[in-house]
Length: 372
Image (cartoon, rainbow, N blue to C red; front, side):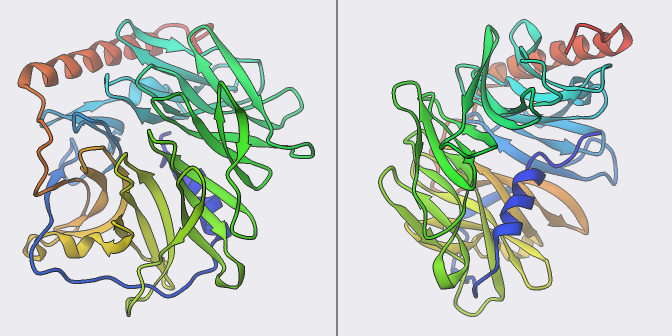
């Protein structure tokens, strides 16, 4: 089974949210082009959760986890065997996730140029990687011998339990890692940044609980936080100060805002929810909240529901509806000068996933014992 890789964080964020008024704007000219990434099967669904610097997208289609690259779709369902998820994608085209093994436990994996590698475990019931950086370092959470969640950092050589932020905290989890090796996550209702040099440090609050969803390569963190009488709100932590923002405001009925990703320029994307439970995608640029729906050509007929990731070129992936079908999309800024990979680069990436898929399929046909 492959489920939405952001469901856990979404549930935590929505549990924290209480709401405040919101709205969008209508611009004179589109700011983004949009590309549909269709499902591999007619009438199927698709969605995108991660986009790397080459514009390759990790998401799912009707068959399960999928890589959208070079105009094609590569089926990654063989990586999860049975129950599991493929969580993150880096610039080398490697992915990480977890799957259930014969013992019933969940164990992590990462793909490399050599194939699928089982991540080491401390023996708890569940290891759940969530992100990886371009060096192939993986972060997430694992259950220790006492059944408590701990933030973890994996390499192919070992796993490190990051512990908790403060005495009395029972649980912690790592949400994201950047290319400087900094890790962001949650501990006991607080948000933290961890580095090799400084260890785990508190990012502060707005007067209550904090949820971390992501960070960028500058060490800026985003998430949700209780904000006094205003209730929970989205925030950006710039390394010194936690800055509240959202919701969409000015006449639209969007009351809840969940930020999912932030790029090096500090542009944030996510989703806002109204009182009816409906979602719309947003982008925060230059401290202004904008409804993504208003930034594309309306004649194209898209209903953009969520934006889950943005790369440093400003390309955004997520999910929406077009012609009555749920589809993955990629938005590209009209002013973007981002280089498009040469056909050879796409071919190399797709070939790599073909080898990984073949290895995964061979693994499912053989004995799983000792794999992950």
